[in-house]
Amino acid sequence: MDERQIILVTGVPGTGKTTISALLAAELGAEHIELTRLVKESGFSQGWDEARATVIADLKALRNALYNILDNTTSPLIIDGHYSPDVAPRDETTLVIVLRCAPWVIREKLLTRGYSPRKVRENVEAELLGTCLADALAVQDPEKIHEIDTTAQTPEETVMLILSVLDGDVKCSHGTVDWMNSPEAEVLLREL
Ligand SMILES: Nc1ncnc2c1ncn2[C@@H]1O[C@H](COP(=O)(O)OP(=O)(O)OP(=O)(O)O)[C@@H](O)[C@H]1O
Ligand SMILES: [Mg+2]
Image 1 (spheres, rainbow, N blue to C red):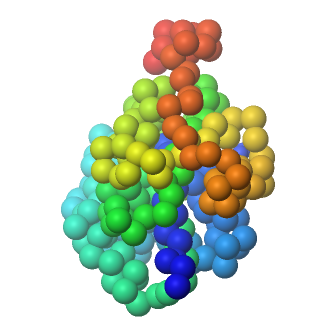
Image 2 (image 1 turned 180 degrees about the vertical axis):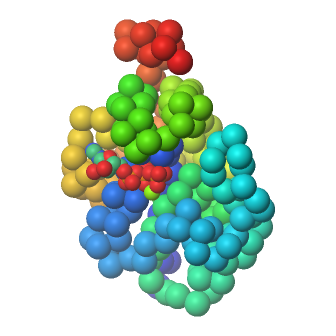
Image 3 (image 1 turned 90 degrees about the vertical axis):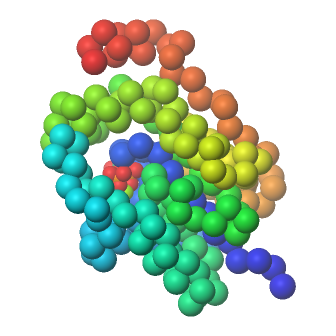
């Protein structure tokens, strides 16, 4: 019997985790688990981070809830959230997608969302430095981590690419995105 697919989708806010996960789930007939929503709806928080204006997730409770879902469903799963590499079981994970998007584009998206200057800056810095990739590499199998720059792609193109990686037509790879050497990064760093 084929093992069911468990696909993690990580990336900083605005890279398109939820947009891509929803489309991918529809393509694969998978269940889409949005971790930030699960944290909010189930009260898996350890408090409120005033400075960041965000809830502090209780990762232990989130992990337990996720394991419960894994035990009670046989459908493929798309786990959407930047905590996903931390809470999903490494051995059962099929693929980890790290979505990247040019930090200057992320900046505009998050400003449009009305995020505070501090929250925008932190997330732009995280994208510049590739923090979500580093976090995934720290806990998941590097050979299962695939990085995608979505800046010049439509969500549909990104989903097609993920399907090709799953089929083995595109080699799973990471370490391909580097914003630091682009001229735009220099301008951005001066503004931060
Ligand atoms: N290639 C692309 N892939 C994904 N989203 C894209 C792409 N191009 C543009 N977008 C747009 O970027 C936005 C991404 O928002 P989305 O809510 O999916 O991000 P997110 O990573 O889930 O953020 P959060 O961490 O806040 O939940 C959407 O408005 C989407 O339409
Ligand atoms: Mg989302």
